[in-house]
Length: 244
Image 1 (cartoon, rainbow, N blue to C red):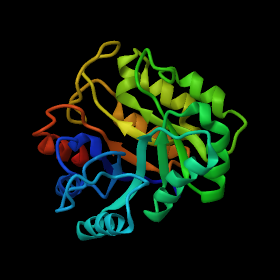
Image 2: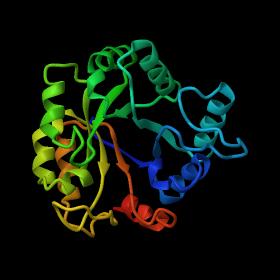
Image 3: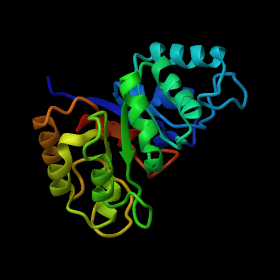
Image 4: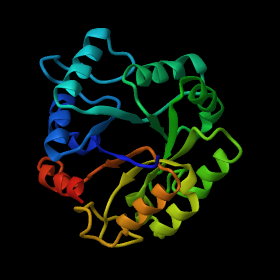
């Protein structure tokens, strides 16, 4: 059945530790998190950072923190993933240990390896788009790369970055909805310029239309709130987004 979960990208709380970010996501009302590589774990673990290379003790500590606040680890990224299969496999193993739905990346050059491992592990590969002049700003670049490949390869559609590039966000979603596996959902005051995020429903993005569109195509991923504004005091705004 089509549906979606609400997650917070921990990058939203990058000024805090992962332990703090998990607690804040739960306070905001989210059901999961998308964790990013390199965030300091916190919780008495010194300067240790999240990533595939961390030891079992750290993994268990993060898993326990998620359980404590009733959250799931939905995605990992945005992660650079090499074409070398052995090194890429470390990232998929990491995601598998957390029971993640997907890995968010812009490593389009590693697509052969990513396709193979996504099928083997049953983990979605979600190609993310940063704005111009990055390589993947144009959704057609991702669409052409994944055309004819396994359905586990798709988009992590960053709606805010599409807006920055002047794209009609709803029409872009309509065109690519069958291959959208996750969303970095954002609301903005304008198209075609760099503007900061704002609480859902207060800008010009048709968020309800976007959610309705992906749901009609059986979207079963996570709607991730990545709120890149008021970095040290955004919790209330993130909670407004969850409420929306």
